[in-house]
Image (cartoon, rainbow, N blue to C red; front, top):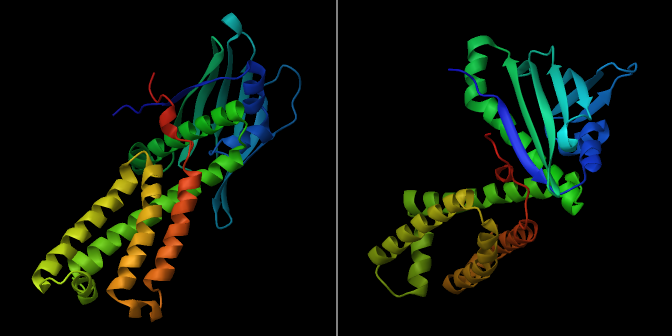
Length: 300
């Protein structure tokens, strides 16, 4: 199968000089682009292409180091600019061996269409090609698109990239946390084990038979599992965070009414639900206008 190059496009309401500076200045470029931790220009003579080195930190003291050659152009119809790139690395740990691509800056009324297309050869032979097609190429395309949206918000709204990425990762960590909590509490104590405490809490609130209480617990478990998956796939997660700000205090009151002795237990409903309430408030506050790769065009 013929591989498809990575393509990302976004419209940015800014001045050409500001966009050019943010993308062609190494320190500024590294701030918004997830693909690089640092970029260092090497000395060059006039009329020579710009050589540079780059690093991408992987954590735990590991990093990928590579090289690049950039050629910038200020020429083009109606002020259009372009920049070509040749890049690679000698490190076998990198999925990318060597590649080429370009950036284009196209004036479009009061905005600029900023786009990139690049392709690369991979390490690890046939296995590397399969992993690249299934995993790495979609991942690096997503990272490029997310970076472009961060750049757009930086230039249009003046929110620093580090602040955007902090909100982005806290937002998704919080999302995965609540998804896990709802799925786990719906699946394990309710559906799988039908824990006696779950059934007795229902009986303490509503005087019904154990069989009916059992089915109420089953239904509640299914609802919690569905809520966990909804947290992953719904776009407007701010509504869910807001809903939880209402639900967790109510769940705390219901649990205490069902069995007040629970307050003496470790990890009891009061402390547990207060913790989740605070995290929900944090999620609600930071989830407004989160950068996203979906704001970019991924095909021509």
